[in-house]
Length: 517
Image (cartoon, rainbow, N blue to C red; front, side, top):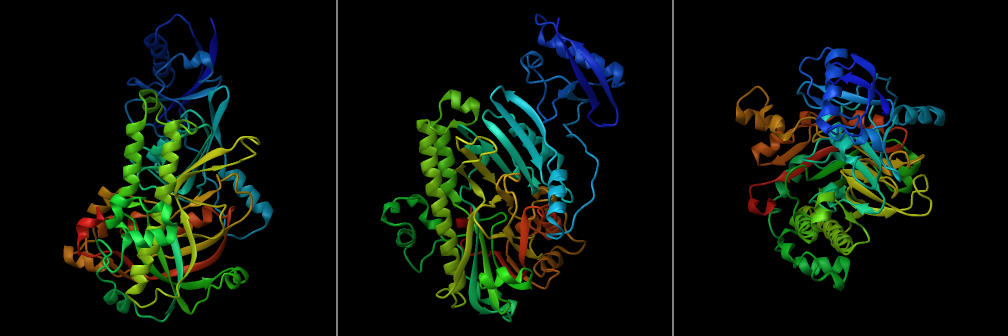
């Protein structure tokens, strides 16, 4: 009768643990084997109400066959719960490091500290490693659980949680997932191609925020000052005449949630050489646009779900080379192109209100919700992988903007060093600290109207245009992590180029607001 060494850990109090040797009878029922482990936990850990077992990645341990087929290996950690949710392995705290300073040796040490990876073999040919690049940034245990469960998906090779990692509905946001053979549309979600663009404008950095507030009107709803389809074709070519045609009334619109158009000025030129090379100056105003593919992306995801076979739906993913996989990728790429054009039209509309659209220069435009193919020699030198980014900016395309929460500084950074360890990705922002429901009830102690007014001017003196009071509270600065912590955690992978100060953030006005849904 084979035996296996396990370490049982009190899920709620992890200093309480016990090493055990379990004899596994191949003929025993599942309830007998799992019952034996529960009994050991009750006796060894003195947990009278022990009832649920979790593996080290947050997956509930329900199949004793895993003890025989290698999915649960010798000396595995088993977390024993008395009914509470999986907490996740708690590690000792380490000291934090400064932002983008220090020698290369210090950076390599930081990487080593950040990337203590636990590995769980899913199939003989696949092994998914997990890393969370956070030492200073808070990571919600639910996000950790979601990240670990994702590592169990077939074909998953590497999972990287960025410092802005936070829970999503089913899958975490602020993460990179690298697979072979399979692609997973749900990891990208419905806002395919969501990303950020940055423009340098001719507007003086001395412009008054109130002037911008007064001018930014009639930006909601369909663009009526031109032909949306003609604009799309002018950017993408005539072959895209039918791309997202059913949703052209949303082309050039932000949408809700955390999307925004924000005017910023340069607070500090950190890397003067790079700033000079990119013509970043302190005398002009810049525009950051954050938006995606609107309902078009949702349509692509729904169409993919309808095309899937029962086997594919059970798997949750698609073989990239299958007909369904190819069809999804084709529509995914179209949605990404549509999303980029959407940001261009948003910038055109916003800058047009200030007569500054004609000579604006685009500095960058990056997707942080997409999947793309890349050869990664450390995983497989001969066969390319699929990099899924869900709220993660690419670090293999040059300059990246990482915005803080509303009313906080944003950072322009240049990736440097070994980008393999961070999944060729970076944080895409500050990341939520509070779920929207909690942020909504966390109102300042004052009258409702006074609270709204307080959030329309930030601590940095910038103005916020948001005429939806619920959205205003959901997106308040306290609902997000500290952007300085995010940048510090990314220190081994980026060089800070410039720090940007917000002067006016546009979220929405009550003008044809039905188009925001």
